[in-house]
Image (tube, rainbow, N blue to C red; front, side, top):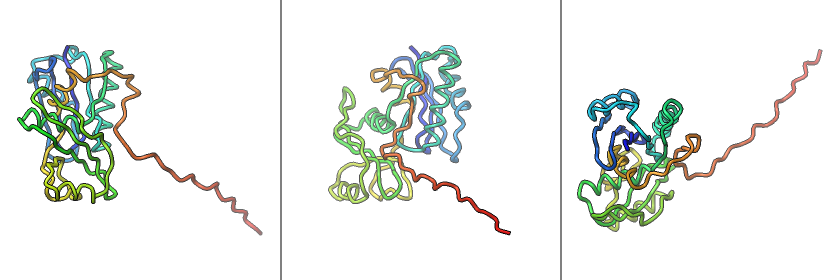
Amino acid sequence: MKTLALEFSSEHRGVAVADGDRILGEARETAGRDTHPFALIRAALEQARGRRDEIHRVVVGTGPGSYNGIRTAIAVAQGWHLARGVEVGGIGSMEGLAEDLRLQGRRGRLHAVVDAQRGEFYLAAYELRADGLAIAEALRIVPRQTLAALLAAGEPVFGPPGEAVPAGVQPAYPSAAALARLAATRFTPCAPEALEPIYLRETSFVKAPPPRIIVDHP
């Protein structure tokens, strides 16, 4: 079963084509801020020597990260489903980041971090073993002080660089290839409309006051 993986949650955007856990083709884009999804898909398919109609499912890196990038990936997956009837599903991008490090040979416990803005950070911990990846601490939002304490204690912390990311966080990005490999064992299909970016903050809004009625007096 061939999988198309879309990972657009960071400045390192990528697309991978896999057959099971075997990567057949991969394309990446790191320059600029714009994402060119169909150029990446075409390049990954060409490298895989495959066709669009051979894709059986599409998996999306659901973040946290670039909201626009993740929404773009979700829109592509939903459109692919409408056109071809493929299965679609999402996997957290921080799992993809940790899995990429595991595939590079990293072992043991590590923390993955992504800037959540407002002086806060998304943080999760993983155990990287030769036989796979396990979640040690679930994804959550923490203040800067929590991240600073981990770094001061010498804990290994990885994540995409950024102006708000403290020194000591080792640079790492989610990978479409790692996402595709995770999908070989962790893919759970869902309704296309159920695909959503990971966003841990509660939605809040302020109701607009009723319109003022201005009466002109002679």
